[in-house]
Amino acid sequence: MTDTAVTLSDTSTWLPLDGLAPGFDANKAELSADLAGRTITLVDERGTRITHTFDDSRVRWEYQPGAGDAIPASSGSDAYEAFRVDTGLYFAQFHHEHKPDEAVSLVLDVTNGRALSIVQAIGDQFPGNTAVRQLFVPSLIEGAPTAGSAPAPTTSLIGRRVMWVYSAEHAYEHLYLSPQWYTWQCLAGPEKGLADTDENSVWEIRPGIYVFAWREKVIPCASVTIADHRDVRAIRSHGVLFGLDESGTTPTHFTFGAYGRLLSNTVHPDRFDPADSAGGTGSVGVAGEPR
Image 1 (cartoon, rainbow, N blue to C red):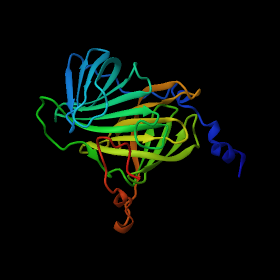
Image 2 (image 1 turned 120 degrees about the vertical axis):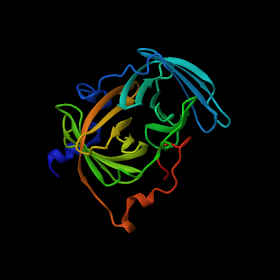
Image 3 (image 1 turned 45 degrees about the vertical axis):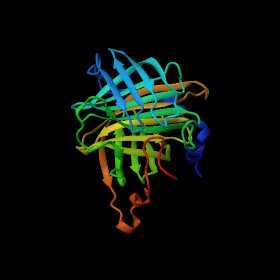
Image 4 (image 1 turned 90 degrees about the horizontal axis):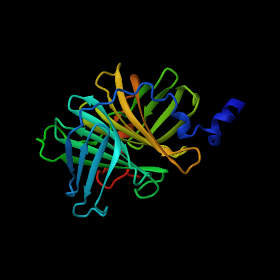
């Protein structure tokens, strides 16, 4: 094994999450102010209601659990960022100030009256084995007409190899392997040469628009992204990274964006199709994919 290979394989030398942040967000989209002045209430299948009232920079929220929801009622206010993904479709992020080991991503389809909430948590409050775990909760927007399909897990990305450019210095490629796994490789930037296979979850929001979320096992972090794949030569994504800093004690949360393009697409014979291993997929109360 060469010295370079030994160094790349030594995960103790890998860059911590806060070390990646400088410059990584160069391709982040402009923030959207479209949600300012709006109140949006999400209602899930348990009857849990979460009301969000947005101003220019903060969101006030109130959580009212429904039947079978063990999470207690609560309320609070946090700084937020929102991105416009498509007409009437927004991606909003906030990191709880009262509970810094939790962060929330909201996918709000105000045109179709549908939403997907992704809660990221450091620790073991959700099922899974990674340092940061994720909970996916589809909902309806109260009082809005409903159209289109509900957000749902999908295998549509399996077999695709996509290059993502986050800045002039940062580029990665993703190979979507199965409902459970994807492989990433750094093509340019401080992590160049590093690669790993980590857990992922993919949800379709609209035709060709997907939430892609991953949970790393080496670095204590996870990410939620939303990407428009309708033009495979000009894919656009918006995302957030959440985890622990180099000390292993302080939460780190930052948003980013990327431009992507499809490099290749593998089509497996039916009997060897990784998508067939999906089994049952869940929504409320399910983190990641079944094992």
